[in-house]
Amino acid sequence: MKTETSAWLRPQTTRRYLHPPKAERMYTLWKEGKLIFGEVVQGIDWRSYPTLECSGMWLVHGKDDAQLDFRQAENRIPENGVPFHGLTFRLGALKLELDAFCDISRTPTCFVTLKLSNTGAEPLCEPLALLLRSGKEKKLVFATPDEYASYAPDVNVWKEAPATWHLLSSGERSVVADEHVFLTAEGLPTEWDEDSGALRFMAELAPGASAALTLSFGKGEPARFDIEQERALALAFWERELSRLNRLPDGIKNDPARLKMAQNLSVQLMQCFCCPVGKDYLLSRQGGMQRLIWPWEAISGLEALGRLGDFSDYIEPVLSMYFDVLQAPDGEIRPAGEGWACITASVLYSFARYCLDSRAGFYDRYRDNAMAAFDWIVRTRRLSAGMEGCDPGLFPPKRGCDWGQEYQAWMTTDIVNADCLKKFAEAAERFGDARAAEVRAEFDDYFAALRRTMKKFEDEAEGSDKLRIPLCPDGDDAQLLREFYPYFNFGKFTALGVVRDEDVERVLNFVKSKGIFGNGLYGHMPYSDGNMHIWYTSIPDYYWFLTWMRLGQRELAEDILRCQISYSMTDEYYMIERYADNDPYYVPWSPNASASGRTLIMMLDLYA
Image 1 (tube, helix red, strand yellow):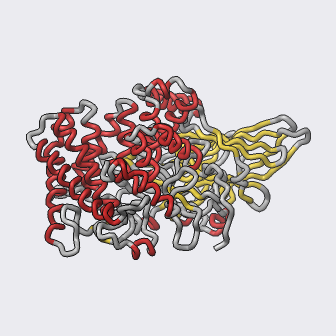
Image 2 (cartoon, helix red, strand yellow; image 1 turned 60 degrees about the horizontal axis):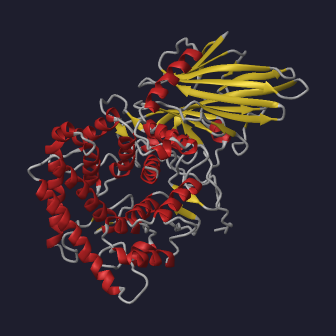
Image 3 (cartoon, helix red, strand yellow; image 1 turned 30 degrees about the horizontal axis):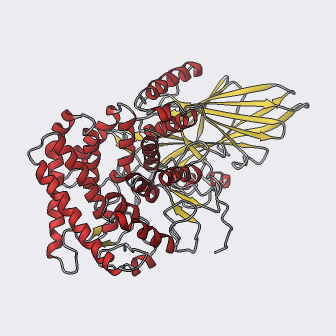
């Protein structure tokens, strides 16, 4: 693989969410002038994602329908982050300003204004078009759902895809559709090109002149609309939602830059709450183009919203869905995506964390479900005692994360489970639960099991200035490392206190010796293809942040937040999952809801 120099540039925003919270439709605006519509379909996972359909329009120019240069495009956002998003392109003297927003219904329509301006001293005439396509989202949207590649959209993919849209009506208002998906256009003369699947129009402008094309894009029956009225209604909704951020500490509220960041991150979090088509429950998505949910990843988003204000109408339906929809008769919370062994405990954490904000009634409502989940954890943990080669007290071999290996994944499963049980014990004690002592004793026993395993590696490292924490409790993780299994969760052990305070520096020395730490980030993640430039941001950094805050090392904690802003957040406040220190257009899975939540929690902790 070609080696490239690390430049450590800030990542670039490639797409932005337009849809409102609690919608069953997703609208994304892409930096090359593309707008994608899709639905939140229950049951879409890694295996069935290639079957998911979408529809889209792509602004192109010239006689050859060339794509606009996304690297030269300018992103525009409101100060407070409400999703009235804009793009500006310049083709010589021609200035193109595309602005888009959605109404705030469960089945929203997207409204778009395309303003054309001649900024030069001579008349201009430039052919423009909207390419319209429907088909598999994985084919039409670059490298979805996660985009683990440098961003490189190619309009030829759309030109080669079947043109399935048709003209329904023309005149002052053109309407084109593909089955139930429609686009309306008014304000400029347009011409429908059936063969190319393109709505064509001209930017024919005198010096200083401007013109605008007004569009609506959605599903169902195209309706007449007043775009200014729609804009006012949507803006009023978002202003109400932002007014609910009434628990911001003065250190955020009185600092314009921090307030703007908190508002933008909060809006994106809200947009990740969605309803699947035809279902009566709410999901908290992880972001990107995914329709999946990860209850462990959702922890930080739910916690952040709960600390920012009263968002019970967001949080309670998600927690209810965990228990009412995903819980099996044996108490386990089954996955709606990938089957991590920490899912059940993660639900208990979110439930407990929310109830600790004086939600006694909600605790009572799902107390029996929570105890059933707790009992499943207890029973499952006991199984390892009779298994050869297993550390008793830890979970038996199970899948710890998206990687498929099943083993005693103490660095992903057990450290999370114990942390979650600790929070559940706090809630049980707060509400005087009859089983509170039992829950606390289970956490204590689990923590002791983790300490027993850790003691083996403390003894192994006696006299050394480095303390290794291997991926598995038997210490033999060489094969997992050869398979590039994620190896950066050390901060979870130091944050929970499984690593003794006096040994935290030795763990950090080990991390540094392995090249996992660099330039303020704690999660180097080399790829098996030889790419050494990838960093898994947020998760490893967050737990080291908690470690430093617990130990009173505030400057180190502040530096972690600084690095998240520099390397994991774009100028438009979009968090990414992984950072490439040599490529600002490597921006997978953004917006990233869990990273947004973790960043908000760091801000709340630091600036309280």
